[in-house]
Image (cartoon, rainbow, N blue to C red; front, side, top):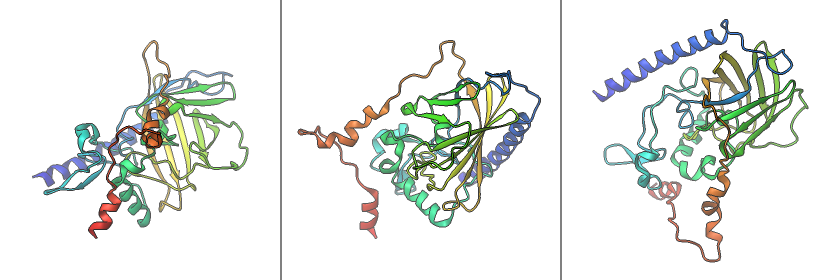
Length: 301
């Protein structure tokens, strides 16, 4: 019976996602004409926006899971020791996913790394230590971001970790070094803002499920206004070291409508100082040493 319910969920989910993507593409190519922004040429994308989905948990279509990090239990997976006492707070809600086609086209060795990342989530996810999220993950973190658009300049400011993207209007050539948020270059395709992002380091993840990339990744983002309060967002991801072919995520972004909506401070670096540096105090506070699943796995083999 459980297998039937699971199969039904996945099939209905696939149909729903396909219908949503088709409708989104129709909306993106539809008749809405956004007001003109500064300079009177391009659409006005100024505002505070936020994704409303489960993509930061796992961008692929998935059922609910008991924890972001699991181990084998007597009759199935159970939370690992690191997340056990978080209970339902560490669980993963179900989602139809935002990956077009449902699955990321990993190379076999990259898929194995994704699975290892997921098993070692509490040790590896850069979000836990408040590292900058990278692109596209910054877009669907569960916090808002603001687009600041001038006549020629565009800047995106994220509430999470105070991340900022200063976006070039002309391509300056290859970035001198890789960075957490990479180098973004803007262009316009009709009323769609296109951002090409390169030179990201390989330390960011795409979600909490261990989905990853190399420093060869190129992300092409597309922001298209589909109504006064919605943007259609797409990101095409190309990374020949990690994936067998380019692939795409897609989702709506919603304008924050509160009359006093603004980006607030979420400087989480200070929140994790105890986690990262507390053991180096002259007199360290008591701390719970997390078990390392990689060591446990090696000992059991």
